[in-house]
Length: 325
Ligand SMILES: NC(=O)c1ccc[n+]([C@@H]2O[C@H](COP(=O)([O-])OP(=O)(O)OC[C@H]3O[C@@H](n4cnc5c(N)ncnc54)[C@H](O)[C@@H]3O)[C@@H](O)[C@H]2O)c1
Image (cartoon, rainbow, N blue to C red; front, side):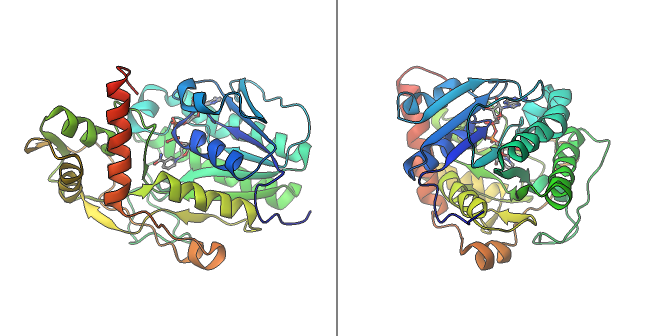
């Protein structure tokens, strides 16, 4: 197989294509000239509206399928991106079995599809495979500090299993596999109530409410804008790198600093109020992106202030239309 330089002319399947990141990926590869982009989704946490603007574009198709029940896509396929999984702590707490199943059975169905079609398979993994990390910043060769029976285990362990499975299909069955470890990403099409900190703070700022910070607010995160993240994912898919690659923004900040950044970008919001820290909440999170820089020539380009402005503008436009994302 020749390594492609872009998605031009490619036939692409995006599992979880109606989710937050999946919909941005569909849009990006269509924009790059992919001739067929099939979004497969059961809408368990996604929203069909996320791809409404793509309907009618030549080559774009939607399939309603639960990928844990089977996965069938006709015709040739060059790339399978597996973005399907509940991803926010609120979602996977509500859907623990679905989360374990999509990470295990669903991922294997995606790998089998890629194997049958001779396609590249890219697995969306997560910084959560590092758990509450004892190494900082997190490099890909760190194996993590994960509680296998805690409340986040359904997600963290599903993703760790999915990585192991992907490597086995790559090593033993010759599938061209890629693994991206995604760190916190934000942008338009997040759900306001998905429990993640970006929509939570933006919603509070727009409603003029207090910012809810868990714990003392000194725990850190680093936030990558969706456009940057998707660019990293596409570059990884087009590379021949089988081992996991971190994609995220290394600019690390405390939750207090982040609340202040949202306040500044939105021009609103009340005081900071503290709530108890959830169990197993990681204390710090920052990607080491040396591999992404060296292997993919990738690094984030969108400053937080600009990403927040675009995200807030999107939430405002949705509110103005009277719908709830
Ligand atoms: N957003 C982030 O910051 C982040 C961070 C790390 C990893 N990730 C990973 O990226 C991927 C996308 O995350 P997201 O934030 O877009 O979440 P999302 O919930 O918006 O998207 C996931 C999509 O997968 C679909 N899905 C779930 N189970 C399915 C099934 N059994 N069959 C078919 N479709 C199914 C959902 O309906 C949804 O459309 C996930 O795998 C997530 O674990 C995201």
